[in-house]
Length: 319
Ligand SMILES: O=C(O)C1CCN(c2ccc(-c3cc(CO)ccc3Cl)cn2)CC1
Image (tube, rainbow, N blue to C red; front, side):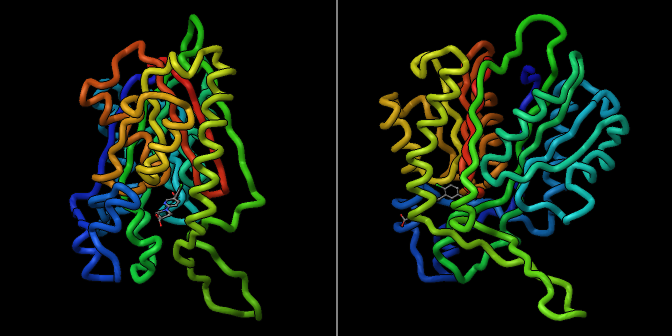
């Protein structure tokens, strides 16, 4: 499988740290030093599928491809428009990809890597797919909870991929892992069953996170995941030109670079602009690095996601 095009889209409304400090007991100084976040984009009525449709249309336009030529659409999201229809099905209908099979994939901030891995296994030679990470996390945030409200933002990013008909895959190796015994360390949208019949339609609960536990999980498991994926790919981590890590926290990225004993320059960071956009963070970063000319065809790229589940995943590909 190879990457044909990349694209991203974020809502226009920017909320700065200073604006948040008017809402809750926090400060630009705390948020910036502890997370690296300066601002985030917040939807004003745009749905997760709206963001994903924008990315899908950009990808098709860049490739000069008609929607009918897409065989598969996977949307990685932890904030779907609804339980059903899937956000991917809505996208399929909106863009007119009448021949595409479409479904959502839920793996929180590892969702985009899990989706790429899944699509690589599903596509037949010559077939193309849209793989999109799209999140409207702002609808799941308790804007009075400063431990989570300052961290997250809305956005979408994606890739158009094609399964090769000849030659080896451009995906050289991967590692995926799930730690369900730590499932309760990070949750959002939790629903509760009826305790008596009949009862009210359930509401979804906001984000809760044991920040210390998730932070510790990430700094341990991400370097391990990268090493295992590189081993399977038959490359050294020194061969890898760029590490596109989930943008959860700038200090975590510093820690991962340090543990891998690699130059921090190989770990681009854009969390200051978007906050943590969960499954959308890696494709947004990917699209930006391509747009800026920092990623060139032939570069070896590692994509690593980590977060709710708890989950971690790394994919190594030749761009
Ligand atoms: O310094 C402090 O006190 C706090 C310490 C805790 N912090 C954290 C902790 C965890 C995350 C996080 C979140 C997700 C969800 O997508 C996934 C992956 C991670 Cl590693 C982000 N920030 C913020 C600063």
